[in-house]
Image 1 (cartoon, one colour):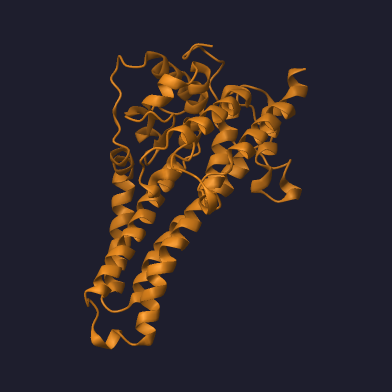
Image 2: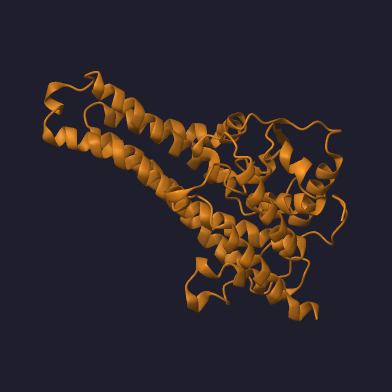
Length: 341
């Protein structure tokens, strides 16, 4: 099916009621809730609507955001001295600056450029059509100069959102699969999780960078003598080693939930999980064949992990396994089958 072909009525706003229709009937809502089975307890697995899961995921995401901020301040407290005040000031600056500039930072880190009005007309038509179905403004479009097929969404709210796609995505993937990838990214925007994800990437990257700065500070005698006792050095060592690891683990936990929820939202937008499942299979092959040079702090934004994955790196990936995402999408179609029949 060519990009931009109409696919039904606009998606209605969610009210929180189970079985709410998104243009595909109550069964779609139950299928989406089933898709998200691992994000809730077994008793809630098939009864919790996507709206409720979305609210729970957002709450966990904001808790994660607060946790990263507290982690940054705690790192300053462990190092001690003037570092505590410096880290508090940095936390405030990154929260405020991240709110206003996180999308610019993410786009700059990927070297993305705005997509011209006459470029990729099929992509632009698909984005406009799916945005209408999702009930959100049409996001700005950007092109990433990379041969790896991939994409991400960013922005502090739906009205100021942006979707960036790679050159490889447009060149190497069928139109139906590109449309599915777009639906996934619009799912992030509709679920309103792109702001926190972008700020989280900024803070996680800052924590790693600050740890390096503190390390050099100690190497070149940046601490006062009174801070160089065993406890001071122990706190500094803990901050240097544990803060980046803790930031990565927190980011990992919330990022996996976000991807599952965006997959479910995309399946409902598309009327089935097969297009996105097929797209994920293509993305898996493409990302392994052509790894992208991406700042690791921003890797969690992409629909498929853009960095090389081997050994222990797979255990700490910010993305859930592609095979599991595909399995859930196929299960979504299986749950939807009785309605179609």
